[in-house]
Length: 219
Image (tube, rainbow, N blue to C red; front, side, top):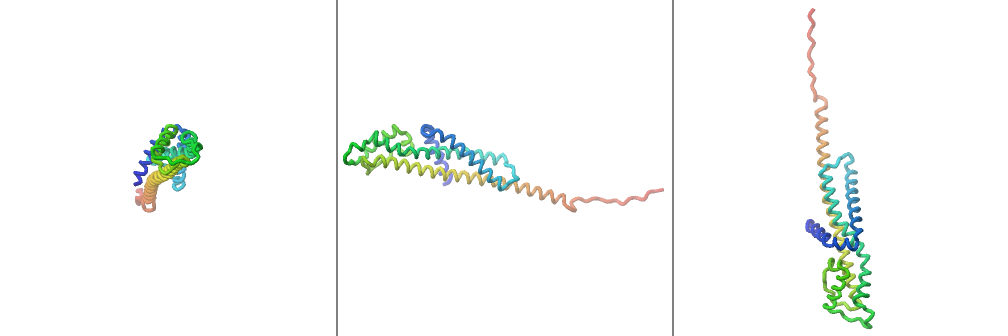
């Protein structure tokens, strides 16, 4: 279940990455910075529990893998937040450039065929609309509400995507943190047992000194 969720999230991230670069290229840099800071914070917290521990190469490798995985979550996360700010502009463009609701004295129902034409025009202008929610079917709307319905659907999808990315990022962090803490615990236990063994070997009675009686000197 968890692996499927993580793989689906990674697939979604790769799917919308080209559109992210087009509409919110800055999110790539911001997502990487957040991921690096997140991994550094995690290592700082672990160091707080193990102040004298030295991170092993395996722990550092896990941290690098976590950073890469978090980049694949935080980049589309930042882009999705940026895209949410464009939803209103998307709705305005649909009304002004495609539907023209001001031309209708009374709002007219929009058939599925007409809705499909509107969606196709929206995808031509906003390709990310098709990437995120596909063609879709918008039935039960009229000329005064269909643009708002499309904008609501786009906004809802972005909300679900943000929640999913946050959940996956938390799961990835929890799994990698468990691996790192487990390796540090084993390392500390080995050091503690080694020190205990050394103390036992160097304690009282560990070394026996042989005493020989001095021989009488011959005159």
